Amino acid sequence: MSTRHFLTLLDFTPSELAMLINRAIELKSMQQQGLVYEPLKNKVLGMIFEKSSTRTRVSFEAGIAQLGGAGIFLSPRDTQLGRGEPIEDSAKVLSRMCDIIMIRTFGHEKVETFAANSRVPVINALTDEYHPCQLLADMQTFQEHRGSIQGKTVVWVGDGNNMCHSYINAARQFDFNLVVNCPEGFDPMPELVEANKDRVKIIRDPKEAATGAHMLVTDVWASMGQEEEQKEREKVFKKYQVSPELMDLAHEDAIFMHCLPAHRGEEISHDMMDDPRAVVWDEAENRLHAQKALMEYLLCNEEA
Ligand code: CP
Ligand code: NVA
Image (cartoon, rainbow, N blue to C red; front, side, top):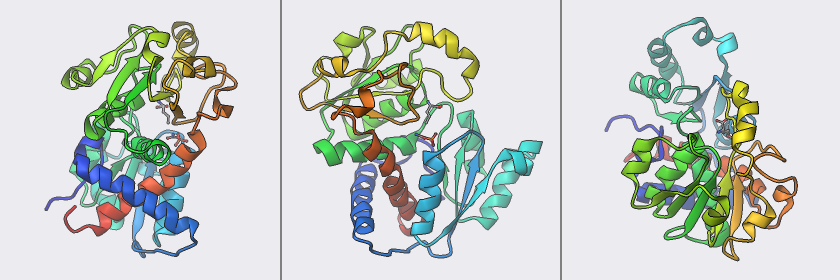
């Protein structure tokens, strides 16, 4: 079987994804019990970061170490990637030395090119278009707090960005309804919305969108690479702020997520992170457990 990669949630079947979430919950419990579990002894994870990161870097590096392997952090500043060595060549070389590789970069086509030239599994650790690893953590967090997400309604508030695109894929793979609450001109990719129109709809008004929802989720107004648009976006997105008052319109059991980092006073009110409905710290922690499950699956499962 050819090498499996995890570039978007569509690379895995719904049952594989469900299995990964359950496994992440199991690995979390094993870690909490202090069990040492090192199935990836001597395995090496290459970690290419062309954008900044706190959670993704630490969760992957800690995760591979806990599984018995080692991570190598690679930034374009001090590798030949930053001096124009082709992605194809870099993939061929690095995949002869590493057992698995994760990449955070700009255009999604870069991870596709890398994967097409890699002998080992490649994981998308965020591109301009998708952030599937975050969705593994978010789906784990929902399951831990509220049980199955199947048939529930999630509202995405804010920019139709990489996270929003991964939420659309998640709606399909985990079988929930997604309301995208974004200002005009900041819609997610139309072809993705069209392909999932049975479960994804756009509602412009935040109050209308939030009403009755089982979960609200948001993200920064300007993503990495859009820093120069920050001021302009602050004006356009002004009313797209998640607050305890907006949460009050949602279902009584509704929870709030944010992939972080968060900008208080912009996409969330100053008090949103402290609201008991916010599960953002569990969500951040679950990056570790979900990605351990992912790496274990890609490297240990002969069927994968
Ligand atoms: N949520 C997330 O991916 O965070 P980092 O940018 O810190 O990795
Ligand atoms: N949309 C954000 C997510 C950060 C984790 C960005 O791409 O910067």
